Picture 1 (cartoon, rainbow, N blue to C red):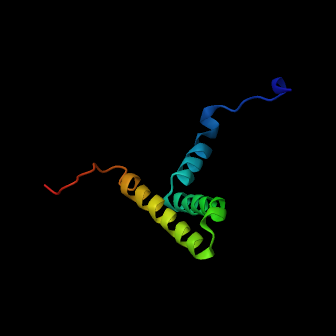
Picture 2: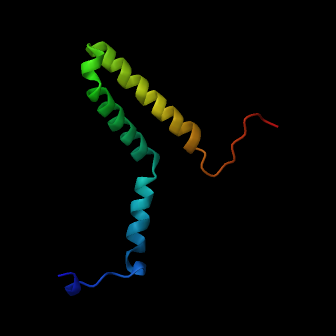
Length: 86
């Protein structure tokens, strides 16, 4: 069955791949993913946390830790990291 279909050339699909890469690397998409992962961690640990209040605190803290680490490490993609201003 695979012999009946021709594979498209990379030149033909490069614009589509570029748009997909732009979406995957956009900050908005990354923060939405971080919300989903934080919610997933909270739901998986809800039997251990024993209360809705602790679950919400855990959700907020994991989101803040993940978003903070993303912002600290990956938001300055083109700029060199400087610890102190010189």
